[in-house]
Each structure stands twice: as C-alpha cells, then as structure tokens.
Length: 466
Length: 111
Image (cartoon, rainbow over all chains, first blue to last red; front, top):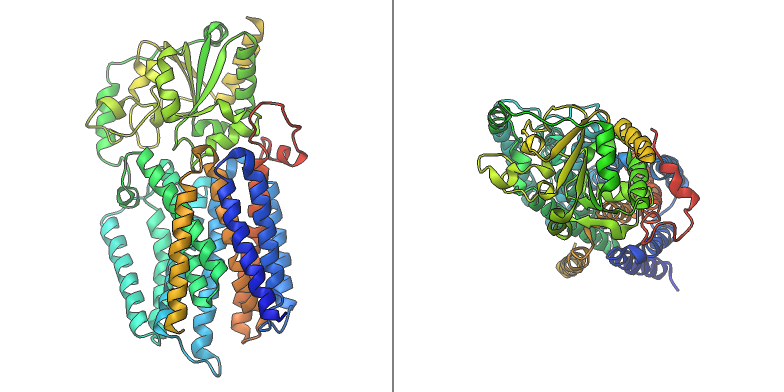
C-alpha cells in the first residue's frame, strides 16, 4: 500500500467517524460515545497526515502539536461551565486563526517562493473566502470573548453612521474578493482585504450587546466552518470540506434558531444595536407610579415549602452568580417535601445556545426535568410557584402585550400565568436593553432582592426550618 | 486546479452540508452547547492542512505560519474534545444513576 493510500484511507475513516459523531448528538444517551468516536477520527487523521510524502521535516509539526496540546488541555479541563460562552468564543478565534494562516501562507508562497506558479481563479475563490471569513472571525470572536469576560464593555458601543460604515467596509471587502478572483495576482489587494476583514471583525462586534451573544456565537460557529470548508477547497482535502460543511450547517441552524427565539432577523442583530432608542422611552412610561411587592426570605420559603408544583426559570444571572449548586439543593428540598420541580429553559437564556442546560446538568439535575419553552409553557397555569432566577427579558410579558416594546413578538416563558411568581433579582435595574419588565409590578409577583447565591442560601436554610 | 476536481469538491460540500443540516436540525436544544463545542472540535481538522504547511519546508514564512496554525488548531482538538466529553458526561436521565466521573467535578464553581 502506497503512502498516499494510507493518508487517503485515514481521511476517509475520519470523515465517516466525524459524521457519526455529529449524528450521535441527536440524543443525550448516545452523544458521549459518538463524540469519543469522533475524537478517534481526529487522531486517525493526524497520524495519517504524518505519512504524507510532502512532509520533509517533523520538527515544527511536533512543536506545534505539543504547544497546542499544552494550551488546549486547560481550555478543556479547567474552564468552569459558567464560563462556557467565552470558552467557545476563544476557540472560534483559534480555529479561524489556523484557517486564515494556512490561507495566507498558501497565497504568499504561490507568488513569493522561487518556483511559485501563482494562484488559479478557482483556487483564489477558495483562498479568498478562507482568509476573508477566517480573519473576520479571529478578531470578531476575540472581541466577543472580551465582552463576555468583561475586558471589553458588554454594552453596545454606538457611534454615528456605524451601520453605514460597517456595511460599506464589508462591501469593499467583498469587492476586493471578487476582484481577486479575476486578478489573483493582485497581491496588494489580497493583503488589503486581509487587513480590512481583521478590522471589520472588531467593528462588527462593538455594537452587539450582551443578550445578543447567542446569535453572535452561532454566527461565528458558521463562519469558522465556512473558513474550514474553504481551506478544504484550497488544499483539495475532502475531510476538511466535509467537516467545514458540518460546522457551517450547525452554525447556520443555531443562528436561525436563536434569532427566531428572539423574534429578530439576522440583520437586525448585526446591524440593529438593540434598545438604544425606543427601549428607554418605553421604560420610563411603564415604570411610573407602579410599585413592586418585596418578599421576605421567610415568606418565600413558606410558599416554596407548601407548593405542590414549582417551575424554576434560570437565566444568565444564575451563571453570573454561579449558584447552580444552590438551585439544585433548593429543588431537592422542595421535592423532599412532596413538591414537583420542573426547569423551564428559554432558548436564549444565558449567553449561548443551551447554556442553562449545561449548568443544570453539571449539578446532576436529570435532563428529563429540563423543559424547553414549547413544552413547559402550557404547564405554567398549573404551577403554584414560578421561581425566576436571574432571568429578565425571556419572562417579560411586554413581548406579548406591548406592541411598542423592542422585544414585542419574542416568544417568552409564560411565567405570569403561575399562581405566584418569586423573582430573585439583585436590584430593580432593568435588563441589558433598559427594557422595563412589567412582570415585576404585578400583584402575584414577589421580589426577593439580593445576590442570587446569597438569597438561595438563605432560602435553603429557611426551608430546612419550615 | 482542474475543473473536474473543482466540481467534485463542490459536490462533496453540497452533500455534506445537506447531510449536516438534516442531522443537526434534529439535535435537541438541550445539547446545543455541547453541539457547538463538538463542531468546534472536529472543525479543528484544519490541523492537517497546517501540519502540511509546517512540515513541507517551503520557506521560513510558511513554516512559521504553519507552526502557529498547528498549535492553534491543536489547542481546539485537545480542548474541544475534552470539554465536549466533560459536558456530555454530565447529562443523565436520572439523578445518581451513574457515578459521577472525576473529570466532571473539575468544573465546579469558583474561577
């Protein structure tokens, strides 16, 4: 068997294993096994590549592999589940960095290296796409990580003519890309496009606020996939094309699902810095003359202790306060007293798709108890208590009743239908977009102010005494 | 690149995209975070392209870029599969049915 056959067989095997791995994710019981197979597929591909006759020296490969493993291990094992969104964002940066660097080096060599033959039109299309989306994702995803980590402000950063200039720059980058397909030898244009895309990644993310992060992360997931698939075209490597297409499809599906869950179009997330105008006006109006009902820990504990059915609604606040363990403890206590506990998960609760599910799974809450929006909404009117922990916009009835509200039309959890609603909240500061939440002022809503972790701790202590 | 090869690639991309769409549309929202981590991990297959670049010996510039690319892709290979596994190990049907693997407890709480 020739060396090429070994390599091609390895790539074929890993392609099949990757597809099976992704397929296994359709069910939580098969997922882990399937992804272990996919990891095996990756090992096969890497080992197989070492047999390529083109490779003349292993030194740099091995250095790269070792350095990468040293960086990757803590990113895999030590990152807490609450930090998953920024962890995913930084990995998009690494992934697209690899793709863009490969693209840049291929292009550079085609013109600068002695014996370089230049780049054909089709190859240029692939390289251009790879570098365009790759470099945009490198800086964009890094900025997203910064916003999630807090070293870049999480608020929308707005300046005059922002959308116009961003769209204009993107159009110029695309024109450069098209020009390069016709004239692949225009090296200056290539590097100008690279610089522009890198800059655009930063500018594109600036106006996007915290609550839009799920869409942004999904979008970068798709871009990384696109860049990888383009790399596959450029290198004529089928396994790259297949995985890139899988990743692209996943990013695309998630982006659409997230936009839908917020009742917003793709473009409005990218170009519509949220709640800058209308939100503030609406807030002032609805908050006037209304009072909230604060509740004491004792009373809240009493309600929970005697409730037969409780729905817990977690939001980003749960991740920030890192109080998922307390949530678990509280739900155990309610159950021990004979109450039934369900968890209601809004698709965009948290900062990335599925964020809440992972946090609750971490504390051993069985997944059969985690309900999606459609499944739980009919149950709210039979619930004695809905306990809202750090969620705001996803339970805001304005989405249903107030046509003027910026979130009008967004599907929400029907928390207001429960017999009683207890909201754990730090203060009365409105959510990210400054949208006032009418739910907090309703007769059946009780506010338990304070840090969520603190409040839960007191609730747990009190429940034990009831 | 000749036209036949180019079209073969296009066929593969379209078919893989289609298969991917069909499969991933059936992934429950429950697993959307692991899905993102998983696709990110397998996407790090770009490491093979980077390895060729780093090992081909076509000039120092390509070698340096290739080595950086190998390292960043490899960090996703190792980190991506580990974190996906860590997450998936946590999802279970009933509480306490299976013993908690040691790896999963590393993510607890504090920064």
